[in-house]
Length: 176
Image 1: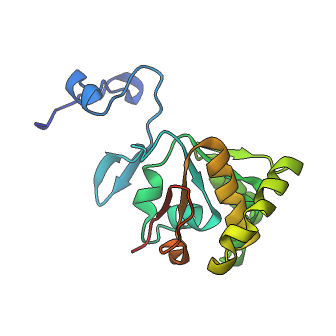
Image 2: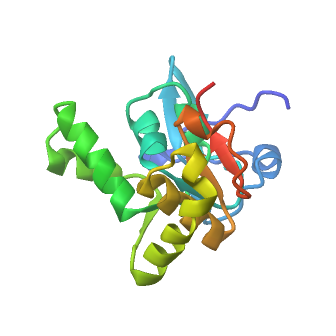
């Protein structure tokens, strides 16, 4: 696709040229996540699938700009995660010196839907124990998989331990 010039209008508004909107399958009301990297502005919102479920390691990779963060970024907006994973992220960020309220504010700005974890979800997670026992997945890992399965979504993780698993679920490990 050839380069397109866009003029910045009043209030910082810009019109995305039709050819770009078509190539990116954008339509009115779509949300873009713009990222400034190395002096260039890019759209980091191209999703790998219609739905993605993030585990704590994936969100941490994004927030801390660790290897694989760009893959996680392409899963936004519309990604899902469990409250238990968000708690893990907030804990890790606090360990890194970020106050919990500041960490929560940073996470809240992201276009991620945080999902409940009730009785049915706990039962579904526990049912995955037999299937994942050999892999040594944690209850949190299984909660991520359970949500991905229930939503017919891909599970996104930065945990390399998932690389060799046959989970009967679409899982993406963002780190090489």
